[in-house]
Image 1 (cartoon, rainbow, N blue to C red):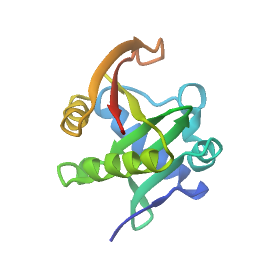
Image 2 (image 1 turned 90 degrees about the vertical axis):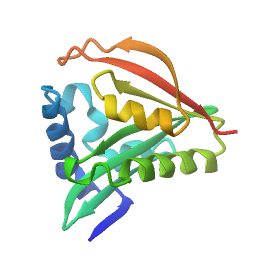
Image 3 (image 1 turned 135 degrees about the horizontal axis):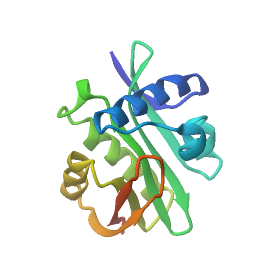
Length: 155
């Protein structure tokens, strides 16, 4: 049975495995130590600033993740990853909605995110959920990543 809950430290290996698997779908390699250190203890990392990191797990296997980081008047949606076996079942919508409600509950006026330009399905989801594209940046990372920015008013 699928369970959505805040991440625990013991979820870290499962989070890393999920993200690495999804990176491989795009011929990318996860280098968490150097490029995604927030994944090494995700719950603690996001909670330090008042945010949260959630996992969807089934039989102790992490199948999806989402996080919210709080900054000033805005919040940032981070780390939305859904295993291929759960896609097109509404989990992306549910997780973005959870992050949106959390940010709104924290009194934030907007929710923003950055998404790799290769993640076209995610971009469709964000637009469907009311996000607007707001920029582009290069990460200069090992995967030669470029990202699109998206933002949504919470007022």
